[in-house]
Image (spheres, rainbow, N blue to C red):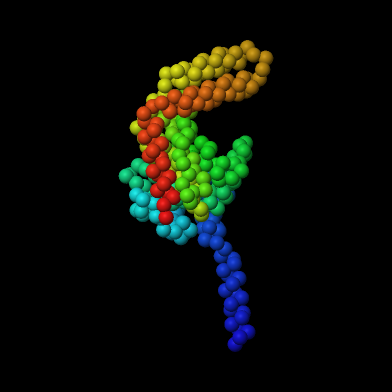
Length: 296
């Protein structure tokens, strides 16, 4: 009897070890679903039956993610959560984005909640920030300061551009926090700052908050910096057929000028926006959000 009991306990222990942590169980289930819905070969449009099955799979992953995250205690975000990953079909815009739950407040303020472990795995994965030609952030703190993190973690239809960092204070219980005014764009061009983004590490969780703001237009002197860069790049483009350099090299150089012009424009904005009365109000609002994330 004792021997049988010992065997049973050993088997149970082995099963528990194989099950791993809730995060590992979730990742194993997610990867199995992704493999199922994306068989080898040329991709094909999913059938209605496959789409319905994929919806059921995401519903199952949502339940598992709720178990990983646990109950949320952030003021204003106590409603029912949704799954942050919008699709398991490769090639869709919302496939491969950050694993987590998303909560909404006042319909347009979004809070993505995940864990440090899941975030660390994601930024090192090809679906996250481990692009073939890009440098992977060394840790989650570094990732939370990068525009590309927010582009991939919150939405994939437009790139995030940091317009100005908001000087928030890290409250007790928060390991790291970063806040900024941002703009989303499909290409380099002057656009108003229209969003506040906050990334915070409150172990074991990571929070990414997105809130719309009243638009702050690009200042004319800053816009001129970009227009001058574009004019310089355009002149370089015009020399491609006459240049001794390969056309690709000239194109890359011209694009580099536009990129640097965009960066200089945003730095100009970041300096000038500090004198805008809205800047102090938005900093105060960002601090209130951060304090709420730190509350127990």
